[in-house]
Length: 218
Length: 228
Image 1 (spheres, each protein chain N blue to C red):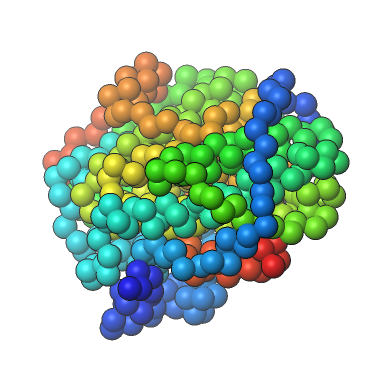
Image 2 (tube, chains in turn green, brown):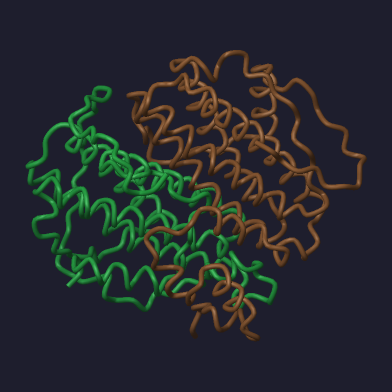
């Protein structure tokens, strides 16, 4: 099935009763995502799809590398949490999109909190974003949410092989939920939720470029 | 210190880039940016002989074989549903797409196992593939379960090559789970963190379904072909 399959969208479908969201992330003006120095080791898609790490990797998993990876994933999760939190605050969406915003936003904030806990302390600097109309216009919201979820999933998948065994389960627990968000959003948008048998992971550089292209971090 | 591991750092003789160009008819950069990548091409890449060349540890073989059994089961169930065409349109659509993905997973894992791959058992789905409500419920259970199992397995494997492959399959199972849940009208992402599950629990649940009617003998040297 191609991506353009005509399936009716189901934006107004009622789901199960939603739980009210409690948290609100306090976002302050510091362009953290522009501070791109925190580099995690990266396994390229090329390495995966053409035979794996047959050559010695430049960086074997270690506690120090875990920290760099977690710092990097924290930035990606903060972007997502910021997006849904602002959408919820503006309160312009209705129906299933509203429910999705509240539920997914709460989950992204939980991911931020978990990654901060792994680092030992909450980060003093929270990044600021400019989402424009993407947090109030339903169509723009859907397009932006899809893009953010896809890039977050690829970013998390790209880092799992760089982690020590102890961290893999936790981070895959996050990857799995990001993939569920992608599936949910794509079905809502009338697009094939799983167009490939294998997800292509992204390197840190590729994710940074994708984030820059959204224009949300200018 | 620079921790970024680039393709150039891994691919000193350019063999990886060359193989990708062959598969995608373009550069690696194009490969990654393409919005739609042919599913079969991706699975074929995973199953490429280069992948199977490295020798697996006994533990990795056991893990991959167990996962292969679960992928056989899903591929067979969804393929049968697609063939019988008794499901509602959205569910049938799901079975068609996800069935193709699971068949891709079978090929990918067989590729990783090389000559250690096992043949598919035979199945009897006992009407589940013809009843929309029962099929949906079963599919939700299988997809949630597979995503949970792959987490455990990924954390256990010895080889980083196998690990990277399982990561790429794992998130597709989670997409499947969210999609079938959405069709069923239940929350696609119920919790902030998805929990792993054990192999023994999966084995028990699969056994409870009574879907598996025979286990093939594995003594033959020839590789049986999967024909789901």
